[in-house]
Image (cartoon, rainbow, N blue to C red):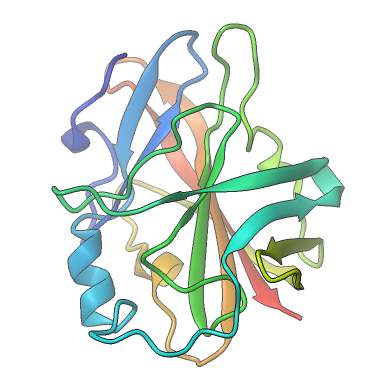
Amino acid sequence: MLLVAASAGFVISAGLIFYFISKRPVRIVSTSLIENAGSLFQQNKAIPDKLPDISVGKPIRLKIPEIGIDSTLGYVGITPDGAMDMPKNQDEIVWLEVGPRPGENGNAVIAGHYGWKDKKGSAFDNLHKLRIGDKLSIEDDKGATISFAVRKIRRYGPKDDTTAVFVSNDEKSHLNLVTCEGDWNEAAKTYSQRLVIFADKE
């Protein structure tokens, strides 16, 4: 496994590292979307000192009919160096469990790999096909289904501020999906962009 230093990727003002499978076979690259995730969430009260009673269950399945996704969800947290942990497999989709649950106020964040390995595609290869208004849903461990609609689609470059992906203060419920996109940079072992799908609870 080849992991590329964060300096080769997206080192931005706020703080969280995502890892994605590249289009080149058998190679895994790391890129930085934001740094110091733990501090970011603490500063914005995404990780309160005392957790309130939670009526929304933990997410267990993501469905996006428009692109044929019907997948169980894994959970990841923050690594000791302040980075978001990575999906272990190319077909795995993961929720950042230190942030809000989908359906709670704030930005729930879900990530998945993009690209090919061992002649197989990855979970979010078709995420770019989504359009504004498309529907997605989360099933939780309490048996509830929470529906979202795509509000915005944005590509982030290396110097863009991506705080809005993780932090929201409008007291509404959002679900943001993240993956790689753009041109492959062989020297840096990373892609030129990050694709983020911003969705709002219906």
